[in-house]
Image (cartoon, rainbow, N blue to C red; front, side):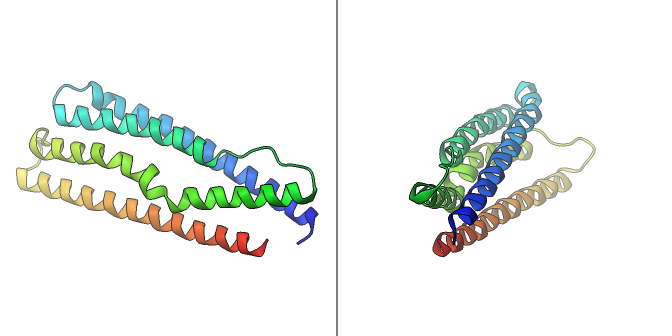
Amino acid sequence: MSLAEIHQKALKLERGVRWRNIREYVASVIVVAFFTPVLLHRESWMMQAGAALIILATAFVAWQMHRRTATNPIPEAGQALRDHHRQTLIRQRDALRSVGWWYMAPFAPGMVLLMMGRWFQSHVSSRSLAMDHLAILLASGFVVLVFGGIWWLNQLGAKRLQQQIDEL
């Protein structure tokens, strides 16, 4: 692979990472805005605690995203360019491989508390208790599927990055 091709690939990767991180930071603001009313609602202490944990997890994940994936300036040419691109690919691959620990796991305690708060303290009055519990179980199953899907997609992304590393 020529240095010009590596430079183009490095620029494309840097842009992709920058836009992905911006999307994640915007999503973090949306998550905080969504869970703040739950935090302030006095009906269920479990749901309040869950919302607080989710807000804290969101801040932690945004910090980890920056720490693990932010890119450095691209050198212009030579071996430094090749090494930089390879190190960036490795850094992104490692972040994707470990996404279960630093990206998803921090949300688990808050999600569990939210579901427990709905189950034990904050029922929907327009539904029977059995129907409300069924809705909570279905929502919990959906959350598990979404988390599994996010993990799987990130593992696929890590494999693609490994292929790019191997091509260098």
